[in-house]
Image (cartoon, rainbow, N blue to C red; front, side, top):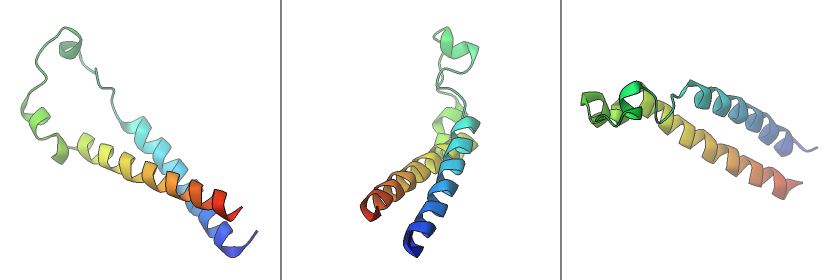
Length: 79
């Protein structure tokens, strides 16, 4: 195992763990009683979702998933 493979593997494990944590921190799409009864989810927090904690978690999930995929492909090429 070369140095580049070792570094990529370490980063892959970090991305894996981070992705698992970020996904587990997110709430479900249909969370809440009002969403299940057909109530309006267009509240103040719904409009500013990108600035909220959930919006940041969604952005971090996208970034970590992209990093995971890229590192996986890199490791497959190096192998």
